[in-house]
Amino acid sequence: MPTQYDVLPFLHLFFEMYLRAETGRYNQGGMFVNGVVDTLEDLEKYTPPLNYVEQFFDQNHIQEVRKTYPDHCLIFGTHIGPLTAGYMAMGFENFFTRLVKDPAFIHRLLAARTEWCIAMYQKASSLGADVLILGDDSGHGGGPMISPKMWQEFITPYHRQIVDALDVPVIWHSDGNVESLLPMAIEAGFVGFHGVDPTAGMNLADIKQAFGQDMVFIGNVDTRVLFSHNLEPVRREVDRCINQGKPGGGYMIASCNSIYEGMNPDAVAEMFRYEGEVV
Image 1: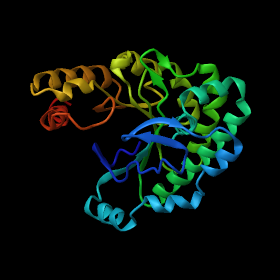
Image 2: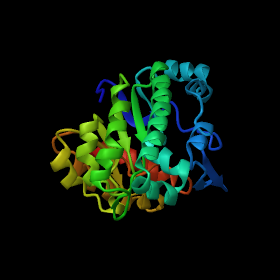
Image 3: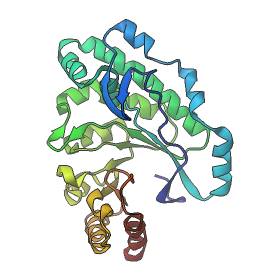
């Protein structure tokens, strides 16, 4: 992780702009509901050409941002990790059933989505992104979506390909409790992990002790306090995260998920203001 940049709060140079129809995802009312990829013909139909990544970046705006914030760490992040892109292209039930019944097809799908991911991230890097965040949501409150054994077979090789193809640091993002997958994230070459979801049972102190020598951890602030108009719970949550994450370094304060509609802007601002006061 570059240390010469001002990285808190993150300046997002880019964020997700991903055409659902061209990847097999079916949305309704702005929410994912299913996928349509079921055959090799579907996969070919719903896999855009790699040069299509050019359509996702406003190069003039990017240059303006870089000129305006020359001392900031510029970050590109999007949810196009192979697992997420895979189960959204096929739909949850079909994807996870075929993991067992037709692993060869799943590997074809994951390989195609990995190529797309690499092309997108290489373009972002070429335009000045200093750090990349691979959104690949892989867990829930009970643990990872697939077992660590299946993760090692189906996901780690593709994550490794993505990291190896890029010349800037890559951070993995996932919601849910994915603690059992962190050794494989380290193996894949990720320099950090974002989320550390406390609502899913991830304990920052324990995770820092187990893996802090190998990864930077970002997040762990419970999003629920950011809806409050009482700022004291925000400060208590920041105190907890700093106390658990600061020893030995390698921790960055942030929401365990993102900053989204409905949050109290004053609470979000207080999270970062108070963090700067107590560190």
